[in-house]
Image 1 (cartoon, one colour):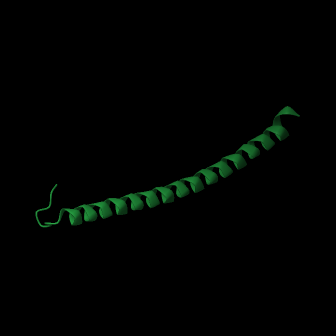
Image 2 (cartoon, helix red, strand yellow; image 1 turned 120 degrees about the vertical axis):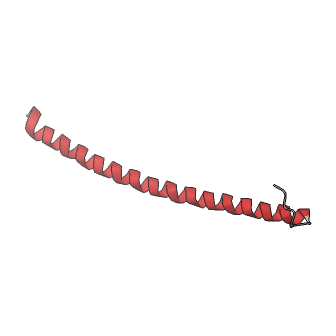
Image 3 (cartoon, helix red, strand yellow; image 1 turned 120 degrees about the horizontal axis):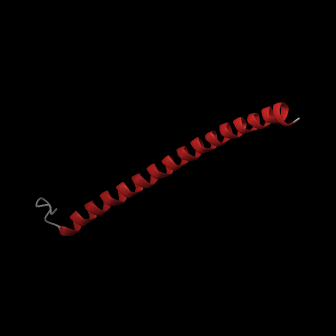
Length: 66
């Protein structure tokens, strides 16, 4: 994918390099955001499932074994 507009090869490499760096940085930041959101969701799921687990245990303690 050679550009015929730019005569200076170094300038072309710089531009392509900068675009690659920018896209890597962007995807890295996006990845961090996604991971943070995933962690929040997992904590929420964990909390909810732990609460329902405790509720099930209490019901079992009250109703079943006594």
